[in-house]
Image (cartoon, rainbow over all chains, first blue to last red; front, side, top):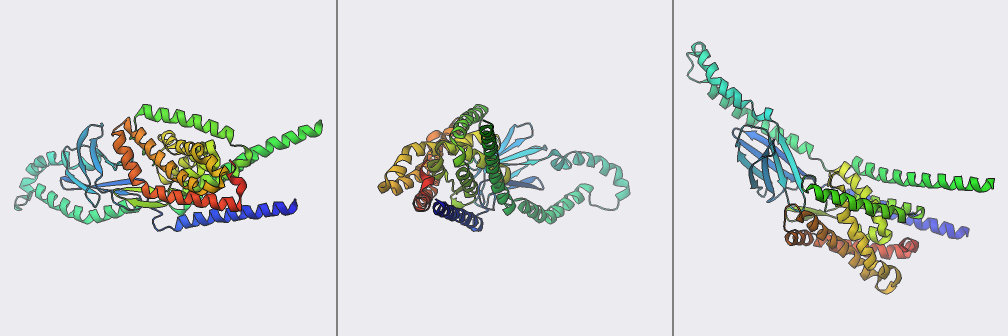
Length: 213
Length: 198
């Protein structure tokens, strides 16, 4: 009987080692970080909004459907991503926008552009003729209007900041980390432990009840 | 196979939750204590398998392993897959919390179905156990693709078109899972035959 149980234990050890091996193999798999989530990222450049859609892990969404809604949920426009997962459009209305990418088979991701990010150029531009009118006497000698300065500034700022924004987006786009994976497995082991605890509590209660009899 | 949040309509989500809850209740009743460690190992394997990625066309496809889960646990596949899906949704953002019910149905129902189709062949007919296990792996993914088509039908797309697309893009996964399931059955048959006895 004893030998049987040791053999049994050895077999279990084999299974355990096999499962652990598979787990480690999965983690080291080259494409392990690539999978199912879609990350959408959008940034402004002048009057245009550029979007980039990727699966988590960096594979680009080729030919995915892009739908742009305003924040009330009304559809503004739609289009398809190119081979690099990019899609650009002219801002149809100065309002907050929600950009949704769908890649078929139930894959979906979204990015929201808050009104604050788009609005500043709207109201300020409306205000700017007044300010430029009032400030004209002061500037007087310069032939460049405030609007032009603002335009040039915005352009160069866009150029400067777009790489940074892209980098930010890429740093957000992290696949599952080792912590996530081990955390998940830990939860499963914990649940199994909980089930074992419940079982043995019931069993020891039964045994004690049996002793009393 | 994970359907993201915000795609399915309310009635589909709710019926998915109801059906998955019923399946999980049956599964928990059938999952006695002796099978808890087995269930935990399979749940962990299912949880991690989704990280093994096969690039196909515009989309990404990963291993599912619902065939082997169903084969070893039968109805126990429901709670096991539900637990793994919750963790995948929380840790990996695959699928989502509102779509848990539907996603559980998509992957667990084919597992149970394949258990009834191939279980007795694998367990009681040693001669054809391996081909049957292979078929179990293949068809559990195939039926999961059909389930995705079914779930999406009510919201946006054409059933045949979506099912075809999902199944076609999962053909590599189907073949790999067939081999994995056959390998597991062969391995367990030699090392731990008790694990295969339902």
